[in-house]
Length: 345
Image (tube, rainbow, N blue to C red; front, side):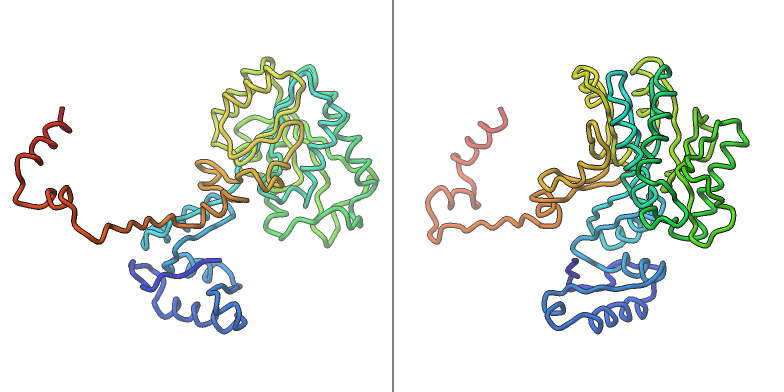
């Protein structure tokens, strides 16, 4: 819900004033009387409507979506100096410690990765596992998927990819990784044929030890594909995370308190869930938001109230002028000079 300022089109924008007025009229017409009284409404549309919306002079604007689109939203809002809250995404890593319970960790990671087929901003994007625990994690990941989805193709519990364009994009990540030498593990419990289908379903797919020149390690996946990289020492995993853009979420699994503290203190992310994935967003008393390329600002609970409110200062002066108040006005006497001298020391 956003409240528009009284002035309109204060900043010059490439969106015509006619288009902006049309957007306002549509919003007003589509809203019930009670909503219009509160100045909130719903505007549906595609990129053109979104662009026009971002150019309007709001008191505050929140955007959730891709980082690349957020740059355009922020540029449009800058014309009106509209403050922004951006909830984006990025490549949220999972760091597996050697002390982790790998049965539980694999089940929770794969549950998070297959939730809406990985099409959520906080989905675990890739895993950093100790080299000597790789086979164990892969084995347990397979077991957990079989337990959740005995079949996939016609299973209503397993989500399809949202659109053909994204289906091809995700399939492209897999093909690119395979062509560049990565090991591909498709978890297909019922051995189904996905070559001919109308629902755009992609079975959970692990990409083992991908390299950074692969597209799957360069872009947010937003799909049921999980790259798994290995490390020798924990410092290597932390350095890898820190060498890349700051993610919306970070997930650590382990029972080693010192190791957990090292991960928490040496990495930067929007939020963290320990020994699970995604769940920090469900805690309404914790602020939720990103940092840098994964967003700015935070909300939920009291933090949301503060984020979307302006703290307006109001001061009421005494009705009568007292001596010290009069002394602050010209002509300035010796008392004022002494006071200023005391403040400059």
